[in-house]
Length: 186
Image (cartoon, rainbow, N blue to C red; front, top):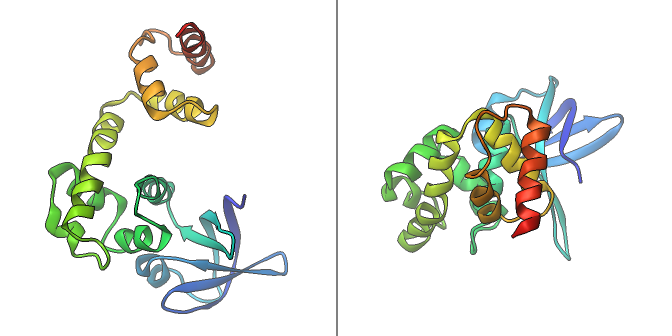
């Protein structure tokens, strides 16, 4: 999987940019906000999402890790593909979209082509809890959550076990070991 690229912008259009990295050109789809920020000829660092289907491989690019994470969360919602998720990200920053989701602002989400009222309600329903928990979590909790998700546990399993990890336990490796110990008992 291609997680990030650093290289020179060779060309760009309204929908994509061509990034040369070590003599290889990567065509990366990006939101209008990203494309207007980047100039041709400059060196850039881009976080990428490598989308693989039976008939195509596509790269989607983001300037911040927060945008990439929100993009991946949107993709986890049934009925939202990469193109719609990228279009949602084009309405503003990740923080703007998160605020719209947390406040239940349907009009912001339905302003996106391809997102109707039902889809906007589904986005709010599925992501609101995750965003609230993320903002209330201690910094070590997000690392623990990411580690458990990386080990193949579901988001619900990770959130449930995190409730039982003592906050006094500050060392990340100790927190992960304790979470795994608790998960092995259930």
